[in-house]
Length: 267
Image (tube, rainbow, N blue to C red):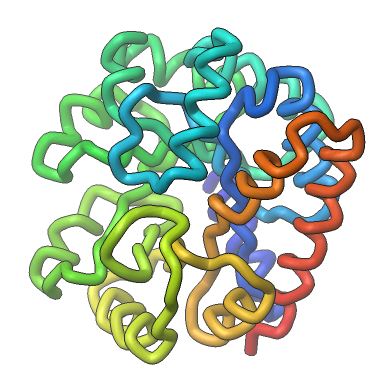
């Protein structure tokens, strides 16, 4: 087992859902970004999703798109994301998922990425635009169960397709709450519960729900039936609205603690 598996076991024993927090590495700048992720880990994030900045983040809404642009303007690339992970790992055992599109991994080299990510202390990878049928060209090079491959499942995915997607997944499953892009508004918790139950019928992996979750109330509602919640745009919106504030890392810590408190209401 790796840190992700251990974390979900711990949370289940304590009747909590996981708070999975996403931020783009290097936003608003690499020094502040390092302080932000350290503060988030100190204030309750259970799993950190560290985004690799990319020029064409097609699955992301405007807030996260702009965060990637800011990061790239500061010259942040894959090697810098791995170095941030390495620095974080010196003082934290919070699981780290690298969130990326496939192009930066291809450019880095699949074998080199796996080796360097594992050595840096990352625990897994989520690739937004790599279909499960083509994933073996990447995960076929992995030789350790310490590195998880997180898969996305859409709300439009039929049960048979869910089973196919989950066959080569590990760590947990990321269930997209609705059609659209990250940061879009409107949540139908009844519909999300139905999709969660359908997905649970084909897998024993933990299920985390993301897209459009932006308030403690959202977190509390979804924590009643899912194993975790993923929050990204809300965190990045806080960064964007306070780019020049020296208190930004502390503000992110307070926000993280508020979201984490809501997961403790899980049954």
